[in-house]
Amino acid sequence: MVLRDGRLGVRETPDPQPGPGELLLRTLRLVDGGAGGMRIIGQHPEAQGSFAELLVVSEVAAKAVAGDVSNDAVALTDAFAVGEFYVRSARMQPGEVAMVIGAGAIGLSAVAAPAGRGIEPIVVSDYKSDRRELARERFGAHLVVDPAQKSPSDAFNEVRAQRGLPGPAVVFECVGAPGLIQRIVESAEMGTRLYCGGGWYTGDTLDITAATRQGVTIQFGGGPHPQGWYGTLDAIAARRLDALPSVGKIITLEEVPDALELARRSDGPPRIVVHPNGDPT
Image 1: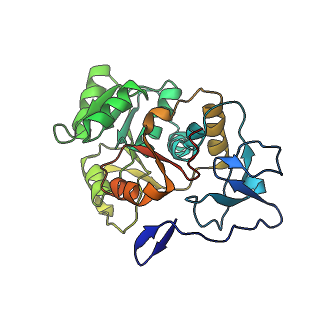
Image 2: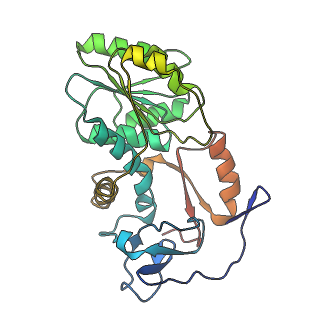
Image 3: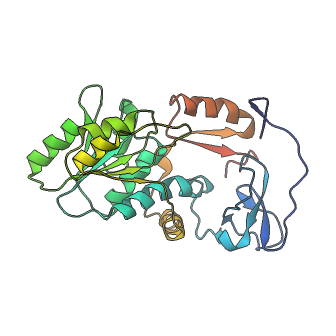
């Protein structure tokens, strides 16, 4: 998959050649010779992307996948490691309320991570009813709200009063929409902690005075760290974490441009899995 003149398309290119300390992989399956046919997941700092039939990855960052868990499940490791990173960073304490803004792929990971730790309550806000139900029925959210009907801050105040919780909101922003962080800050209670995991591709502005007045702590990026990434892979391989309900569509390489356009408009499912080699297994 290449980008030319603002358009994505499939193009034949020379096979990549691995150098010292690198592995040549066939997507979803290791190229014969090198690791005895084991499945491997990894990354490379200079990789041109994974929408290809063959990849070169750094051997030091690669890890063999144990067990018989599906390739589709393994492919979700990175997305769910993002939520794991932010929840681990938050170090939530009893009495605090987890608020997840957005129930796309990253938002669902930010629901699964506290749910896997037995943290409650977890409140999820998303405009799409199917994503709200997915967050509640398959990933462990306790309360889901439509922000068109009830603001996340109102939902937080209600659940805190109902449960008699003394702590602040711990907000995981997983949308990346312009102006959203400012709105969260303006409605935040004193001491709110805000972790920004949304995909930000353009600049935005924030009134620092409002954040200071409310005593809001904000973290942007910084992960996932290797321990969270590999820990998420281990959880998926051991079936302690079932990330597959987030997958709404499986496509071929030729369908990637249309799928990316759906994702850009937030019209697609939380997660789309690509089979570059057309291999369904």
